[in-house]
Length: 146
Image (cartoon, rainbow, N blue to C red; front, side, top):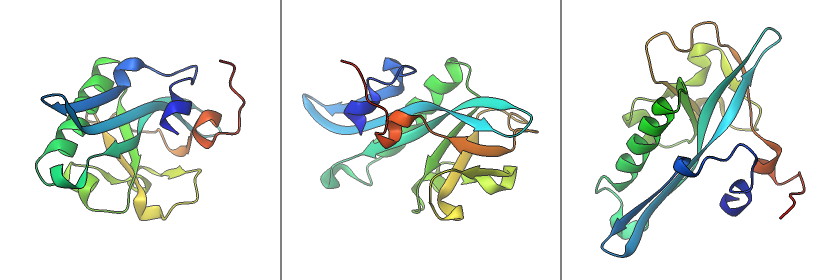
């Protein structure tokens, strides 16, 4: 999926982060722009679609650092919120909440409590309810030209 998303028209190179310990890769994270849509509006946010940290580096702050870096880059790029799909406590511990609190739902078949979001500024999700739509490349259904 990660390789496929790198060819996504709206892919931003700075939305991919790699953590290294000397020359060894110890973590990787990727986010992509997605759209919250309702009948009345479309609102672009970003979604974290990949976080990978080898077992021996977990619980050392590597994943947390990757997420904080992505959030910072999202904010600098003008995005007002970050979403993620996860059913562990990891994202909750970083300030993410159930997206349903903002009347935002996923178009993916996931448990409602796994659909998470974090506003990057107070009020940034006010009146932004709707469904999160991922690009076709996320699902691998659009053929990409090399």
